[in-house]
Image 1 (cartoon, rainbow, N blue to C red):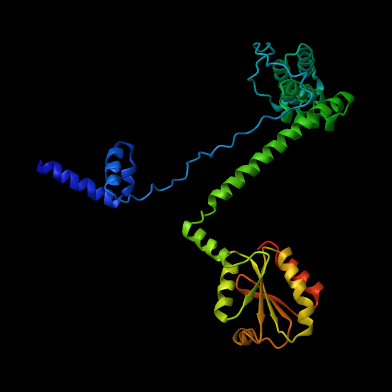
Image 2 (spheres, rainbow, N blue to C red):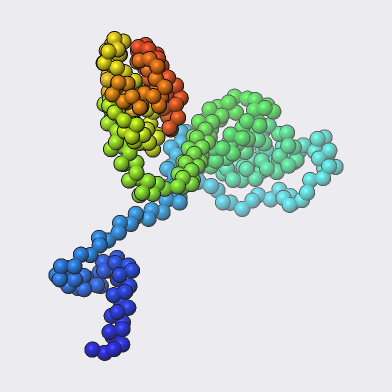
Length: 337
C-alpha cells in the first residue's frame, strides 16, 4: 500500500479518536457500518439543540374599530398657495394676528379637501394655517380628522386633544369617540411587544443551566419524597436532606418528636396531612431518643419542636403542638424562594 495513503489513513484515525462524531458523517456511513460489523462500539452522536432565530418577534395585526371612513392616501400635487418654504417672520406673525386671511383661506381649502376625501391635501393646508396661526383650533381639528381618515390614530388623537383644549365642539367630541379606542389599542399593542422583548432579553441574559447542574438537581430530588414525611436517623442523613432541599430551593421543616410525648401523638397526624398538602416542602421527622446526636446538634430541649430551614439557614421555629401556628408558618415560608 502506498506510504502516503497509509499516512493519510493514520491521520484520519487520529482525527476519529479525538472527535468520534466524525464517524456519523453521512459520507462515512460505509466505514461506520464496517466498524460495527467488527463489533466496534461507536459513541452515539451528540445531541445538538436546534438553533432558533428568535431575534425578531412577529407582531400581530391590530383590529381597529370605526374604519369605514378610512381612505387610501391621495397623492395629488400640492395646490399652489404661495411659497411653502418661506420662513414666517415675527412681523408676518404680527400681521397675521391683525388679518388672518391667509390662515382662513388655508383652513377653508382644507375643509373642502376633507369633504372630497383628500386627507393629504387637507393636512398640507392645515399645516400652512398652523404656521400662520399656531392657536387655530380648526387647523388642529381638520388635521386630526384628516389623519383619522388615513388611519393615523395616534397622530389624530394628538391633534384632536389640542383642538379640544383651544375650542371644544361637538364635532371634536364625536371624532374623539372614534379615534381614542384605536389610539389606545396601538399604545397597548406597543406596550405588549415592548414587554415581550424585555422578557426575551432577560431570558437571554440568564445563564443556561449546565447538564451537570441539571443532573445534580435530579439527584437532589431523588433524595426527597414529595408529599411524605421522611424519617431521619443520623446527622449524615440530615445533612443529605438539607443539601437536597437547598439545591432545589425548597423549604425544609424539621420535626423533633419522641414516642413518650403526648402532644406529639396529637400533632403527628396533622404533620403527615401537611406533607400531603404542601408537596414542594420537605418534611423531616426525628425521634430524639433514636437520633440523639441530631437532637444535640439542634439543641432540642422539649418536644414537639419544629425548625424551618430555607437555603441551608434556620428562618423560624415553633415549640409545642400548636397546629394553627405550624400551618401558618409553613404557608408563610413556603412562598416563592
